[in-house]
Image (cartoon, rainbow, N blue to C red; front, side, top):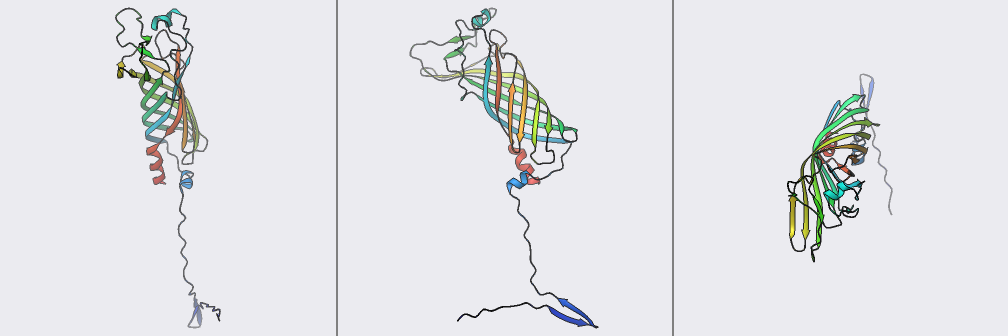
Length: 275
């Protein structure tokens, strides 16, 4: 037979000079502090500062271009004799854009809703061609020599054929924050960037030559002015750029653009720890 047992903790009663003092003997209850998960940390409130600096930002996306070249014109034929609109067709899934921003800074302009955003970084673009085109790094001393040609070597097959460009870039944007008191707010930014071409090369991998790299400017423009934009949704930021002027100095009317996702590996974890 099981007998139910009830226990009741009675308070202690003490009478001192006619005053009754009752002490509660119930055990103290300790409430554990609420643990904040990652979602709550990312949505926690902050006190925004007039200056905000981010380091080590990385972009990963796609490089492509808008081709408005008149291939029947004399300029295009001088740059690449016999060229047509299929020569410079790129593989969109293998043409990549990677940007490394050493520093990005925000300066408050209006109640932390509008800020000036600027930085310094390197922009890398790879254009993977479908056709076996080759850039000539030594075109000769003649005026407007041919630079581009179609490789028609019998029996040669291509595993890789790309044009790679590198720019030192300075972006300048106006940033609009719709939730400025959140750790990762909803933001929209737009502006321009100026890039200087410091490196360009044509890399090929063929069945008989193996890996080869031809380094030259290939009559590319040394400066690139682009329209740029960003959209931040919490910890996810999308970016895009478009250069309305051709990336070539002559012959070809090719306007490059990029889009992708931005990663902030340094600032994300530093902000989470700080909060």
